[in-house]
Amino acid sequence: MIPSPCFVLDEQKLENNLSLIKHVADQAQVEIILAFKGFAMWSAFPIVRKYISGATSSSVHEMMLCNEHMQTQSHTYAVAYKASEIDQILAGSSHITFNSLSQLEQFGRKAHEQDVSVGLRINPEYSDVATDLYNPSSPTSRLGVKSEALNSGLPEYVEGLHFHVLCESDAEALEKTLEAVEQRFGHLLPQIKWLNMGGGHLMTRKGYDTDRLIQLLKTFKAKHNLHLILEPGSAFAWETGTLKTTVLDIVDNGGMKTAIIDGSFTCHMPDCLEMPYRPNLAKGYKEVTQAKYQYRLGGVSCLAGDFLEAYSFEEPLQIGDEIEFLDMIHYTMVKTSTFNGVQHPAIGILRKDRTFELVKTFEYDDYKNRLS
Image (cartoon, rainbow, N blue to C red; front, side, top):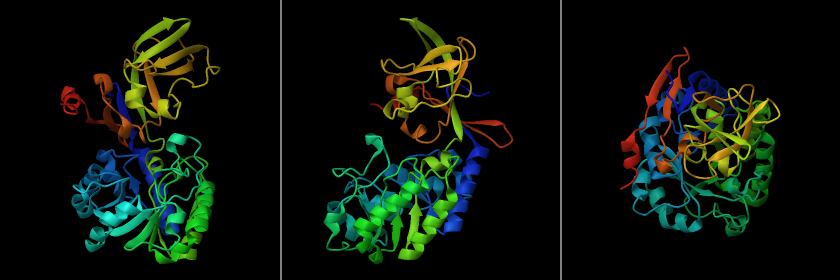
């Protein structure tokens, strides 16, 4: 029996995504690696390792997870590295990308001396991302080096460049990004060995033109004679699983009915408040005009804004009814919190034979041990 609340990964859907990603990598002859910031469910890594061999990390803890559970060294990028952690990071990394020239100056020689391939993040000043919270390409962004700082050429030790400006984007957005990269950093491309195109390539979304992506990558790779790396987060776990919750109460105030669930948007689905993002439901509609009965969906935390505006349902909701949120695996589990001591959802896998395996439950000690 699947407990509530619970994140449920569908093994078959994950393998379908992985198969497509491997197809793109093989056809374009590029390297596609997993970004832990989007999907770090390490109990599924034995499945992932059948299709890809690499991963990218943005902290020492993600790097340690890569070493232990992806069983490989990490492509590591962080906004800034601590001097106290750099030796550990270099020991567990095959590549390290620096966010600024000052960090490169501080740690680049050490990385080079330890045979870790050194990269530098650049800001192409182009992005199709409309939400400012997720757009790293503004002229004043803290992420990456702008072209005017590199007019005189490539700094010492740098073997690769890295950009990350997309978010759930299509192949056309990547093509425009590469045009911006060539325009602003084209003079540096003959001097490097690899180009990391970051994440945001949502190649597993229905309707994504993978043929266009493959041809774009092949053309760019041949033109510049570079090893190309992509590190999507969402694409790996896109539409691979759900968050199961249960209605605990129905509150009727001011003519608005709110179904209180045993989950929380602020604790378990923060993108629903930050983006804001309205997930689809297994049963129910995010358009209030689709069905007769309307309910806000309210989280169980005490935050006043822990709710989503009304969804519609074919039948009146009752206490004990299940509310299942779709597409809740990527960029969801990695962002959860235990604010208010709210029960963290269990984690499980729906295997290909449709049996359910409960992987992890969370108890009082998990909450307590994050504090002091």
